[in-house]
Amino acid sequence: MQTPPDRSFAAATDPFHLLNARVHEVEGQGRSGFALFQAARVTGPVFWICLAHDRDRPMPLALPEAVAERLHLVETCTETDLLWATEEALRTRPVALVIAAPEKPLSLTVGRRLQLAAEAGGTTGLMLIRKGRGSNAAETRWTCDPLAGTADSTHQRWSLIKNKKGTTGTYDVSWNGETAAFHLVPQAGERHQPEAPPP
Image 1: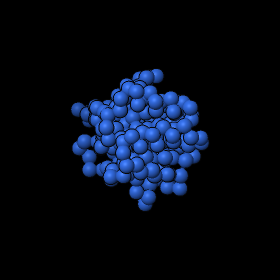
Image 2: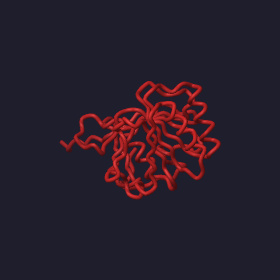
Image 3: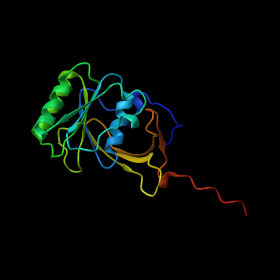
Image 4: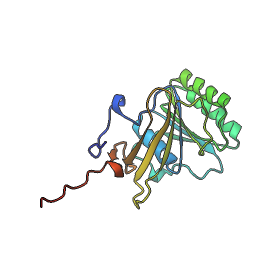
């Protein structure tokens, strides 16, 4: 599947649209990039909640256009504080997106509490997890990594590996980090081979 460069999709046909009032998860080396991609696509305040010693956080000068002025970075000292702050932010209107980066695995109980908070606030949540540390309560789970064999960091492979309300799938994406626009890159097995010249 291929789309023209810099084309924005309607939510109904957008494979990367995150359902509102639900909590989603993303893992892999490209999880922060996926989170910034989602932050660039929403309107309204965005909260990014992380532990104080976590260096994997957004840098103001590297943020997509119009994200910096809407982003609220919250640092916490403990995992318990991080989860509490995440719940409170999810319940707060009119927050558009809450991104949180826990270090420990998310239990089913924690996952359900986050889902209830997202429903109460009508807010979208995105948990940046380590691989294999997600909760069964998550609406969707993504794995995002740089595309192997390319030197271009804008090329990523985003795989939807869990989806409570639909299908899963793998997408090779090119996104420059400056806008919410993107295009899908054909995967290697999908590229058309040139026709052989006539004899």
